[in-house]
Image (cartoon, rainbow over the protein chains, first blue to last red):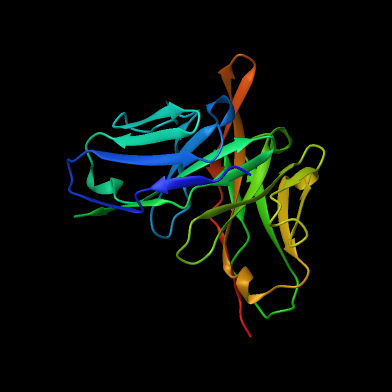
Length: 108
Length: 126
């Protein structure tokens, strides 16, 4: 089973700042099958990025994903008030999927 | 509109059985894998398993194998998650979600949960 480790656990930033979130896999993620989700309190997760770098439908271009192999990054170029939330990475391969433990982006 | 609608919140006692549901609409239910995801209070997301309603092919994450049963009834576009004997540690929010594949080139595909249900809160307490 591939273990995903997200860092940092919490990121304290101000609106307008840049957020850089990391997701590291214990083994190489096949076909860059790495996704990022945003989750706000009391809501279901929402897909942001699939295939490591492709934005899902309706996702603003301030969200971008990069990486391959075992190291992946989600970048939010300029934080808007609605971006303060928890972000989860997820991989899928060989009929098995796993999530990271999440990174909380909070208002400083 | 493509959506997954889950059954309502449940409060159960340890040892009781439970079956929660996830009904799809607005898409061909049998063409996509449906997954179940657990989120314990204040914790992250955990991948429990997936089912292909077209033929009920099911894949469990090892830690959930034998602890829950995932099933589907394609005639009513509904997937299920069930427990035969609940424990207090099963207290969590449970989400169903549609797994979609994307061509990544070189004959490879990437996968992500594109559509999520609203979640079913299961509380197990004596």
